[in-house]
Length: 89
Image (cartoon, rainbow, N blue to C red; front, top):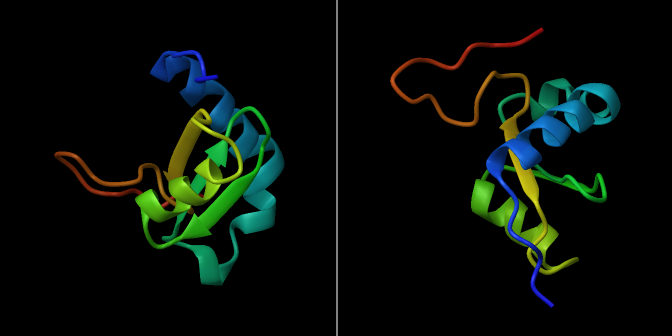
């Protein structure tokens, strides 16, 4: 059964909350800064790596069509669009 389509807002808000409240302290270590994190917003499972597609596909092998939020560890965005990445603290 396909996963029901949900809006990007319905993925972004819980994804950011999961990252900030439960995952950030576990992953923001020197060796992970700048890497991609993909999070299944339903389960809280996550994958870390250098490639957004690979981290997302790893989550998709665990559950078909999961709602995935992605970010760049230690930065404000995955990729800069018309600007620069800003390091978060």
